[in-house]
Length: 143
Image (cartoon, rainbow, N blue to C red; front, side, top):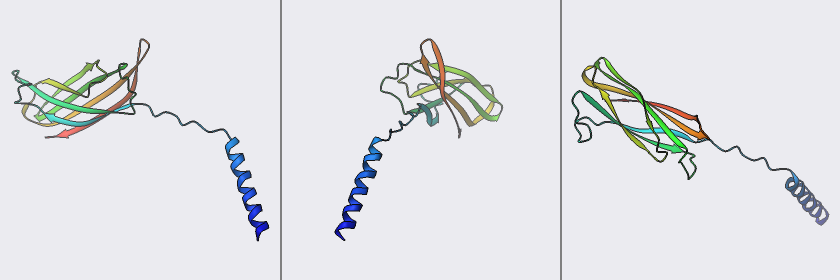
């Protein structure tokens, strides 16, 4: 019995020693991404008082971001759908990498109430002078 136990212990140490000698595979870092978390109709608020303007407030979060976000920028675009017609913003650039929200002001080109907003958020990361698309997220909110 004692002989079997010593063989088992020896084999355990041998396997553990071999495992320690094997190279450890480094995990690939997960790239940063931006995700829209909240879309709100801001019509009638003090931030949205212009005539023939509809405002949509967008909040997002950044996943897997480094502490220094100075190289990040965002482009927020969208489409409002009315009872009849729609309005579009091709893209508002937000250069502040620490920003987590933006107010979009659409020219009211439809008629009736806003039925839905389809918002797209693009996260860009600067590599020297070049902007690289890191992620894109689209969310639709019905009102």
